[in-house]
Length: 333
Ligand SMILES: Cc1ncc(C[n+]2csc(CCOP(=O)(O)OP(=O)(O)O)c2C)c(N)n1
Ligand SMILES: [Mg+2]
Image 1: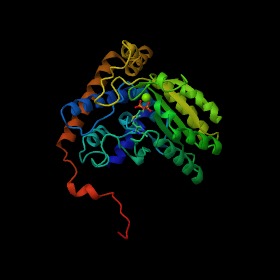
Image 2 (image 1 turned 45 degrees about the horizontal axis):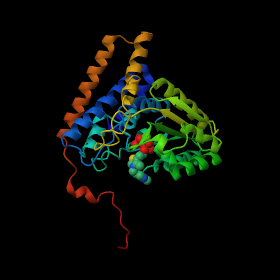
Image 3 (image 1 turned 135 degrees about the horizontal axis):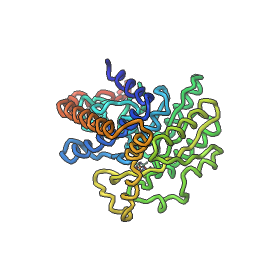
Image 4 (image 1 turned 90 degrees about the vertical axis):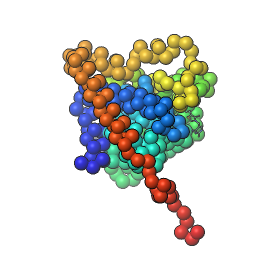
């Protein structure tokens, strides 16, 4: 089975039911915790941006979208990549710059990609993915498919020109795109109320005559439903939707940031509504899973992620001769 088949199979598994979606959220959390350990042990060059706490948004999106829909996300996209189907070794391997990574270790933490499950190259430039997703929606429209595109971005990014230009163009042309804002309350070290005059980013949809929807980003089922409805509108030719998922990142912006600017108690308050704990409680209450089932899931996820770390650490860095691969120069030079 090729690496791409593995990604596709993992993606399809999310359709099997709520247990698989909970398991994927657990996997994302465990991968991010491993990435932090690997960073602290010196295996990750530069920095890395963790999405611990935001797992339900990633899994809800992947459960609602098709593998042929195109998704553009950001440097905080490890969870989205895993949710869309990339296996842990492809994600951790890329973050550690190893050949087993999804771009052979050439891209690093902020550049995960897998076209076979619709993951466009992820973007380190704030806002850059939004016009790219809008362009992917235009492509689907020109080709006459009923595929759609999703732009994933943060709350701070809703103040960037590319956000406004993309919403304007998509609404005017009724393009099949969903704008998914992960509102985690902070853009780098600034709280949203110091940078943004609206409490709900979704309110900005009104300026572009499209629906703006606020969804509980800690609840995977709510996210799946909201993105599903927005994608259905897009496929039906009704145009774009702005979906705002209220969520929280447990760690600081990047690895030099301890998040000391956050008010006392805020993190603990959000942890009361942890997406994995909420998902677990729902499965237990409905009788779909028992405590033993949940413990078994946790154990198998931990084992799988540890096996992926072992694969990554046994994988070489790219050869130095790779440095010019994918680098283009004008033919007349
Ligand atoms: C065009 C541009 N400006 C500034 C930066 C520096 N920068 C990196 S992340 C970030 C904050 C983005 O915040 P948000 O959109 O809320 O996303 P989050 O990190 O919370 O997921 C900034 C200003 C950048 N990468 N690109
Ligand atoms: Mg943010």
